[in-house]
Image 1 (cartoon, rainbow, N blue to C red):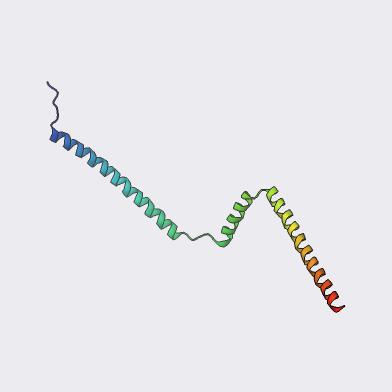
Image 2 (image 1 turned 135 degrees about the horizontal axis):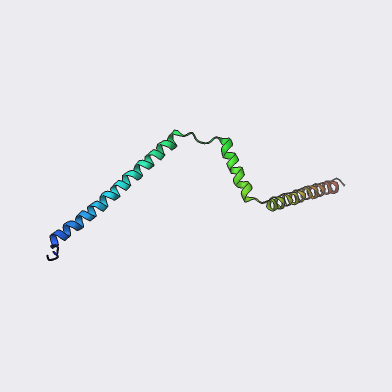
Length: 106
């Protein structure tokens, strides 16, 4: 028996059938993905959003993870230094105003 060579029409038809099967499989995957997304969306819509307390706890945890102990210490030291400068500037300004008033009044 000879090996039969498929004709061009048979070859095209088998090629089309393979592509059709691939497209159908892809269509089934897409339908399944859309079903999963719709289910997830309905779950999200029916779930209450987290309360403000939970959100603030989450923000605090994120901040605590970002800020190391050394960074916090440095920030506190810098704030104290800045506060000292502000107090010194206010004292200097008050002294200049007092001195100016003293000169004006003789």
